[in-house]
Amino acid sequence: MTPHTELDQDMLAWLKDAGQAPKPDRLTAALDALYAVGPTAQATKQAQAKVRQALAQAKGRIVYYAVAPRTLVGNLFVAVNDRGLVALDFGLRESDFVARVQQRTKATLIRSREKTAEALRQVEDYLAGKRTTFDLPLDMSLMTDFQRRVLLAALKIPRGQYRTYHEIAQAIGKPKASRAVGQALGHNPVPIVIPCHRVLGSDGSLHGYSGGGGLKTKAWLLELEGVRLS
Picture 1 (tube, rainbow, N blue to C red):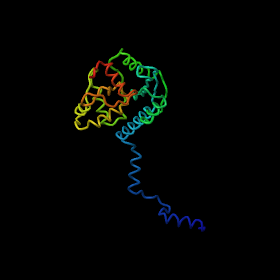
Picture 2: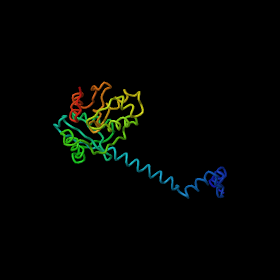
Picture 3: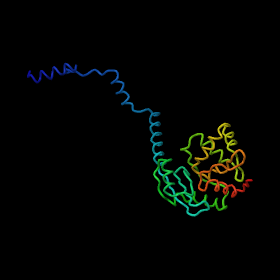
Picture 4: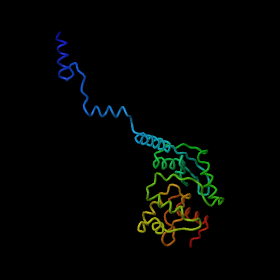
């Protein structure tokens, strides 16, 4: 036996593998059994669900927007994705609108009159008095649960009527949250369609409005809908 062969035999002996088949330990045997069987049906369904969710999220990262110039509230911007209306704003520059939507959605914005045509048409018709309600899907997925509840309550206010911040707070079961209600309405991403202009102070007076033109626009929208304020 050469020194090299003796070294090999010594190494095999040290590894406890000197010419004989290794004995599998329990962990290796268990892993081998799992690999042989493959994933369970439940595990496969869970993995498929995660893939679908990831694809949906990726799809939602594309937002289409467009502008209707010179409407009754100035330049009108809308943004939509595959789930519905994402943003609406007016009285600002296009670059500011794009920056706001990108910051909120973390999406890629693409200018497309075709993708936004229906939303633009409905809002323009509303402002011109040709339409009294909207038929647009809304994407509220980026809102907190509290803001979603507040805006859904505002959405239920009939045209030609108004509610106070306190009444909205009561409607969502948070009677002491009038200030928080005002903040949630102030961050309404789709004003006019979600009529936050129909919410007034407890004395029936106008309070802050984030849309272009501020309180003047809020008063004009209420007048358009037949609300006469003293």
